[in-house]
Image (cartoon, rainbow, N blue to C red; front, side, top):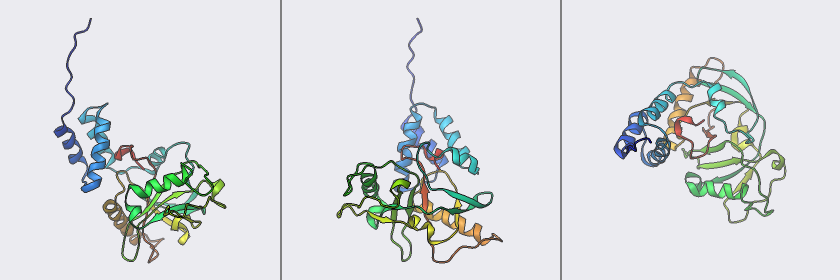
Length: 239
């Protein structure tokens, strides 16, 4: 028989070091990332997880990002009008969303309200619908309110079930604001889509468009984040 050997799991200090060496986070983002990293480390070494994180921080091609899109979930259709090294210009087909705005959009209560409307049939028709992707989030900015939106399945886009009066959920048929402009510039990245990270990435995209000889940013249109993966997906594996 094989001898029994006690195996030591990575200490909390080692796990925290793995995260802090690879990802710069603050506040709630740090807590969320730590929870996911601890989950990942249950089945892998600190070194192997850290290598995955560091590797993901480099430039990731769109072909890799597309592989990270969850299978079996409906997502809005779009065509790629132009492709650059780290971003692309898209033209979306029109779609409908359910949305919450204001303070609830910045926390878990907003997500739960939208999930209740779609997944649990908490609407006036008591109609359950399939989950879609991505979740669209707009950060608060000057003259703007935070918002979070779920894409409605196509079969309900024309006549969606009315939300409950006290749910805070509203309906939009303008692609969650994406249709405000004919074309959309999309910069892809891994990690967590918190407000601070979203604003940092938006600044990068604005600079890319400032240097683009063919396209320019439409003034007055705020950025949004499209999150494709569930909260339990490791940040370095997200789209």
